[in-house]
Amino acid sequence: MTAELPTGPLTGVRVIELAGIGPGPFAAMMLADLGADVIRVDRVGDVDPSGFGTPHPDLLNRGRRSIAVDLRSTDGREVALALIGDADALIEGFRPGVTERLGLGPADCHALNPRLVYGRMTGWGQDGPYAPYAGHDITYLALTGALHGIGRAAEPPVPPLNLLGDFGGGGMMLALGVVAALYAVRGGAAGQVVDAAIVDGVAVLSTQIHALRRLGMWQDPRGGNLLDGGAPFYDSYECADGRYIAVGALEPKFYDELVRRTGFPLPPDEAPDRTDPANWPALRAAWARLFRTRPRDEWAALLAASDSCLAPVLDWQEAPEHPQLAARRTFVVHDGVRQPAPAPRFSGSPTAIRRPPPWPGEHTDEVLDEIGYPADRVAQLRTAGAIG
Image (cartoon, rainbow, N blue to C red; front, top):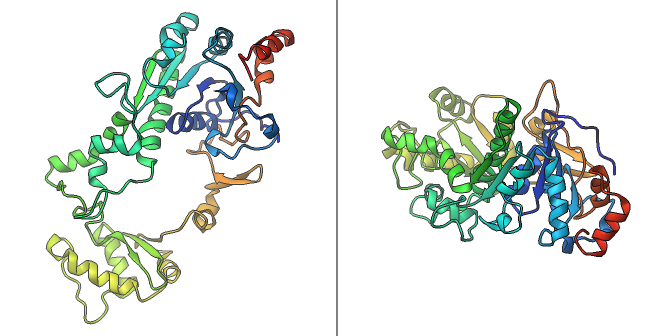
């Protein structure tokens, strides 16, 4: 198991990640995929040397090295600050005030490294009445209005996995914020705190829905709008084999292509005016009857090379094998593990997965040697339990 040579637009940037779960590690993965040297600070109690030299199964931690440090100890804090003093950015996902109590808050770090970009990942943000309390993806979606809008009419809201909150509104926003702040530092600005809150990020992602409401083009009851499954030409349908196809023929010319290629409608069904929502129930029933006449893959093959905007609903195992994703290498194999490839792509500084996910503490000695710790001091720190 060897690391590939540094590549990507963030090559030369060093990021310290204080280990957490969900959106923080996702942001760190994005930065590592883009070429940053990310060092993950794991807990000493999580160290299991028996796994060293083999890929850890958590793909979210790919692309970085791991050092195990007891941040609650004086010696551990010394090690963390030594790492931070030479870093460009730090990412942490604790509740507000935790790193301050550890002596690793923004003021502590900026006193040592004024150019440091200090990225903070929380659900509620660093302030506000909910800031001290726990939450999860679905909690944050509920308060932003996003969860209300996802689901069928007259049915309960449907959690969209944790893609919208944790990763879209959370980790991706943190990664963007860190990169923007690094750009400012390169232009001569001082380091600063990036306060990334999932509620803020999800709210920003829903900007278009707020705009459509103001334009009178979106109704608050879910499941009755153009993009939420209300429109029969933007929905999924069951096929003859029990699998599904997804239809997204919004524009008239694409809808016309779909109609022409499928032979819609089946007799004795009719094709009422699709622009009138009053016709949508009948139109949906007609499309549903048609799509149940063939298996999923027959529909996919019939409509593949067209502008009909129809696609098979693939499962996790099938998706990497689809010709479009295979042609673009949207999924790659690294150290024997198939996984999503880094994104987006760059013509002049290509990205790559440089190393597999590390086991906690796998690179402790390597990293400490790199920042100037002599072997006897490392032995003292390990004996004291400050490192793993």
